[in-house]
Amino acid sequence: MKRRQLLIILATALLTTGCGGFNSNNEAIEADTAPAAEVTQEALQSEPEAEPEPEEPEDTYELAYPYEEQLEVIGDNSDLWELTEEDMEVFSPFIDYGYAIDDLDRDGYLEVIKTFWGDETKLYQTSIYETTDDKALSEWKMDAFRALDVEPCLSDVDSVYIIEDEDAKYMVYATVRESADAYWGMNTFYRMSIEDNTITLEEIKDGEQSWYFGNEKERFSWFKDVTAESLLVSYEKKYYRDERDTTGLYTAYLNGEAEAIMDCEFEDYDAEADYPIYDYKYIDCGSDGEYELQVFARSDPDMLPAKLSFVIKEVGGKLYIRYITYVEAERREGNISEQGFVGEFGKGGANLAIYDYGFLDADARYHFFYKMHYFLTVNDFDFGDDVEIDMEEWKDTQLMVYFLSEDKNDTEHIYYHYTYTGSKKYYENDNVFKNTLEEAGFKTYTEKEIKKILSDRAKEIGLDPSIRND
Image (tube, rainbow, N blue to C red; front, side, top):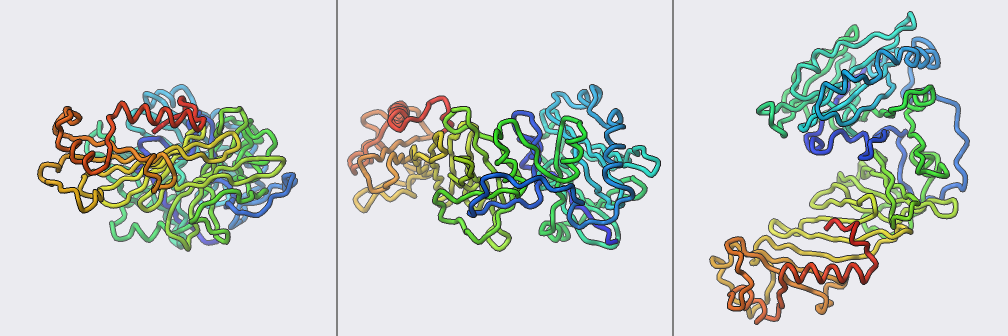
């Protein structure tokens, strides 16, 4: 049997939000757990397929004894690994936790992984318990993890990479900070070896690190409620049905048992490409109590690396992809709130930021709110040939252009607002900036006036002001 390496990654960027494996309402999210579920535009069957018999995970190998018996051992000994009050006192404040079933060292003996985190600077702790031949549990020695400033968070969506290797060595990285109070730090990578259920670490040289990132990721199915069913579902690496999934179709989709029909426009969407899902959440567009499924997927390996978000709506026993946006991509990113408010950001150059705002209604249909171009320096804005600007005098002036129409040529719905970092009195009538812009035909508006214009626009398109996040 080939032995493997694991690369466990703790993304520094996720220190602001905690681990990526659980959602904000403190329910378990099986991030990166489904067996390569993909977003497609094929029609789905009106009813989910019957549940198949439990199967061994992909790349199967012989278990030491049947998985049913091993799961029973894990369940019967839950008092050894379930979260305790002492665990919750390790970090203050305590934030979240989760469990998963796996066989990390591929030795045929299943493990239950417990991970939890807390503290304002996001600290993590993981414990692992493995079944034994005498139907008991043996705890792994994690001293090498404990010695790090910040342990790896296994429920991070990019936490574990699998490396084919004959030496049975594994990989891990953690964050080294300048001080105990520092929030950010530098990532240091290590080889992780497991021998006799003891973890040892060896630092990786900078030049070696990039080789590992293209490899397959280990997938976990995280749970919180300890039941026989949750142990089995985690072992099968499936997603759990949430109570907000009233028909089961969303869960079937996550588990690759149902498909969705493309029902929106997205110019970068490739119908022939694969978009592996790594995370999801439920949102309530229109705040009508009928939930939509938002899935997060990676771009096809043959495309530029990016993460996308797909909003899926169930209608009449079928699933439809109603909106797509970039979550992370080169020069762009986006976010959709729990109530369907959409905010997108892009870079139009070194000194130009572009913001797009809109919302998804109860049918998950997109409505344009406004676009804003934010020029960090006014010399990047094209005033035309008739406007002369003293760049030394204008060097601290920034310009915001608001478009309340999707047609950029609709000049009637374009509004200009500028700020000057050197003074609060930049809207006096004799102000050189205001006068120059308006003499050139660019009418300017104060911050108060812009807020009123946007408020009126929201009312016009039926946008609930309580969900705005612009």
